[in-house]
Amino acid sequence: MYLSKPLHGKMYPHIFARFHNINLNLSLTYPIGSSLFGTFKGFSFDRSANVRSEQITSFAADTCSTSLIRDFVTLLSHSPAISALWITLDIVAWATYRSHAGEEIQCLLQKTANMKAAEIWLECGVLDPLKELTNVECAILNVRCPTEGCFATLQPEYAAIAEKLEEDIESGGSMD
Image (cartoon, rainbow, N blue to C red; front, side, top):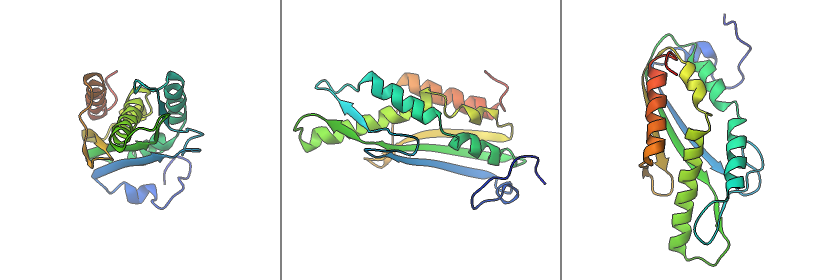
């Protein structure tokens, strides 16, 4: 019926193709030790609450190596029309601080680590396969703060990336 390789999982493409409103909630937790994609050990903060650049590079490389989004796009491409595609990034990336910081500081560092992980997801291009979709009328991308249970306000540069991605998805891959 489809000219693509068999897709493993609980949803067959011909069943999935009947949906018109899709909600993708990427609720990912990167534990200390090994993660979904590799050996990400969390973000470590220095005394100035900065993340080491090699950790960011490692996390971005691990994130971009996943086929999760490409596989999702393959499923969505079989649908004749999608009225709305909601994408919510809800990412927990464990934070460690090499000091006896108080609970309030640890909470703030955890929130910072989660936002940094979401920013990397936006910046590294792992969501770019969504731009290839030609059947989405409306795309909405949000970042949720898992520690507070509410939607986060992105820094302007990342808000611009998210907005551009929404526009590219809605334009059916015709924009660069």
